[in-house]
Image (cartoon, rainbow, N blue to C red; front, side):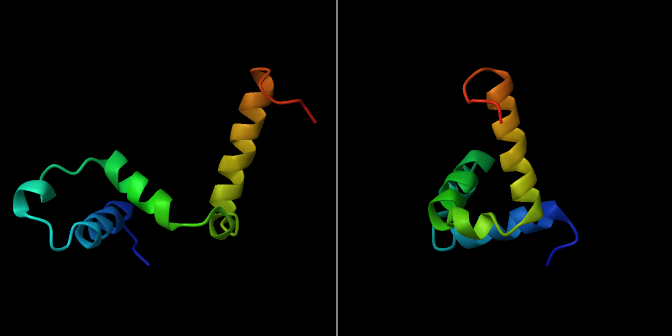
Amino acid sequence: MYADPKEAIRGAIRIAFEGKPRRRKNEIEISDLYQIIGAEIELERLRNLPSYKDFENAIRHSLAELGYLAKK
C-alpha cells in the first residue's frame, strides 16, 4: 500500500504503459488511466471499499436532489 496517493498513480501509469514507445508514455493523461482502470476493475470489488460506498451514496443523493432519482 502506498502512503502517497501520487506515487500509487505514478506506479499505475508505469504498469499501464509498459512496453509502449517513449513518445506515447509522455502523452498520458489521468483520464486515460481512469479509463484503463475502469475497464479492469469490477464494481462489486469497489463496493467493498468504504470510500467507494461513500462516493456512491453521495452520487445517489445528488442525483435525487436534482430530480434524476426518486428520493428515499
